[in-house]
Length: 632
Ligand code: COA
Ligand code: AMP
Image 1 (cartoon, helix red, strand yellow):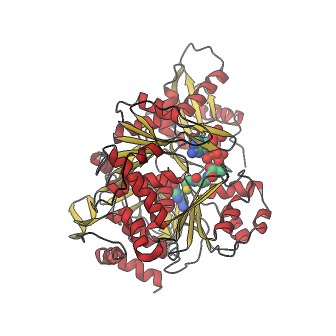
Image 2: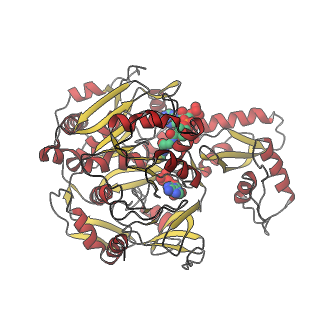
Image 3: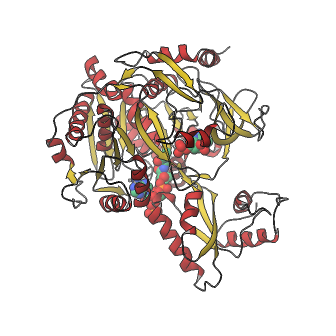
């Protein structure tokens, strides 16, 4: 039996022993009473009765153990031409100071704080400051519009919002403050305080009595110490797309999260404390939470916070420049970033300009990794390229190649094997397990390992209904795929209406809600079609109300703008078509899967339940008009 098999078997046979051992690497104020509390099934809690502070484990502990002068965070911002290095000592002091600013505004344990910020170190400082005082942060990605922010404000009910005057996208400055003001205007809940980081590219107007500048807020407080919290207390809420416009507030606890994330740094990513680890993502996504902020710091690594893109800041050599300059050992990003680089530098000429001597491994996740991208990265970089599969809900990988345990052979198209702690099964529609190689719903037998969402914010029933009810006793990942006879997992598609655009998770249902609100639209459908760069792109179809005589192009333009205004530029919704009818089953269900197959030029069967097969020809013509449905 290989080393990985041994570790994996132990993790399932004795999960409590396995994770208790991993928990030894974390500092506890009080050890747990029970490693796994299963008294409220199907809800499980890890390290019940334990007390700790995540910020203490991420910062203070390392300072006390002699890492005070080691770089904790490198802020590298080609878009503002800034480089700033924070040692562990400096980062702890900055975090304690900002935690004091929050305390001075009356924020304490259990209070929510929304962080709506671009990729600046203050975003990480705000997150860690919340962790320090036991407040619950909820980071909202900067590419979301005011309406999405408002939904999150109403759900999380924050006492304070931390934001910045602007973010910087290539070629434009994105003013955040007007979006923040609009969101608060739209929301029913009104936060008492907004703390705004003024950036030199754009100064935000402040609302007296509610808003104050970052520096002034810090000046009004005094450095705050770490507040012990229960292992089962929430560390953060991170909203992610559900099947409707109402996002799901994924809850992360303190104890299980710290244990699991710290464990992955050596066992999965194979890095040692002190090495430089870079996740090129955004703090607004789960990858940013776990692998820009928490895991590298918990493990005593140096993390890189990069405010830039893979291409255009200034060229497709941007990643190699960062790796070389900061001696990055391990990098983590989404395949779409590599497709963008490959598109602009197909021969990888920029790679040769940099010394990548310290670079050992590239990890990819966030979307299916197509074998072409995998091979290109392997060929050009000459390091192992490891695909791994995970979700906002799980907080860390569900399937991966654990380099720190045993480097298993890489199989293109597969994120390798189920991670220790994950008992993965593939089930058919009746909940029966299918054999190797057969596609079905990929599920995890409960309990999920530590660090995974214990519930949704203020929505236990929705958590149960969304994840635990289709296949009782199992967590439904929402992904379909198969496991082969060697245990390799293949993740093929979502079983719901979630699409993946440039590694960003979006709900087509949410976009449909926006289109349906247009006064001329009678009904609509949004599907995700294949895209060479971004993996998938949304395309909308609209049937207009009887009597509407306006030009189709005008209506299309309006709905494109509506999605941008209401969901955000990140939705990348740019294409829609007006059609006479939508293809439906006789019971009225829109045949989105068939439309997607036509758009992608795939062979498809006309569903037996279709109401009128002739509609499919009309849809094909419409898709051709907008550049899809190409044969072959
Ligand atoms: N604030 C405001 N706007 C943002 C934003 C932010 N934080 N992030 C993205 N946007 C905007 C972009 O400017 C773009 O606007 P546009 O329609 O005016 O061009 C739109 O949202 C779509 O963004 P994106 O899909 O990211 O496309 P892009 O063309 O800007 O970049 C990639 C494409 C591939 C370079 C980029 O998506 C990327 O680097 N992705 C990989 C890494 C990653 O973040 N993965 C996430 C999970 S690991
Ligand atoms: P998010 O919650 O934004 O991280 O998105 C999670 C979803 O992205 C998963 O449910 C998958 O559909 C997809 N995904 C993430 N990583 C991978 C991967 N390595 N292979 C295939 N799909 C992936």
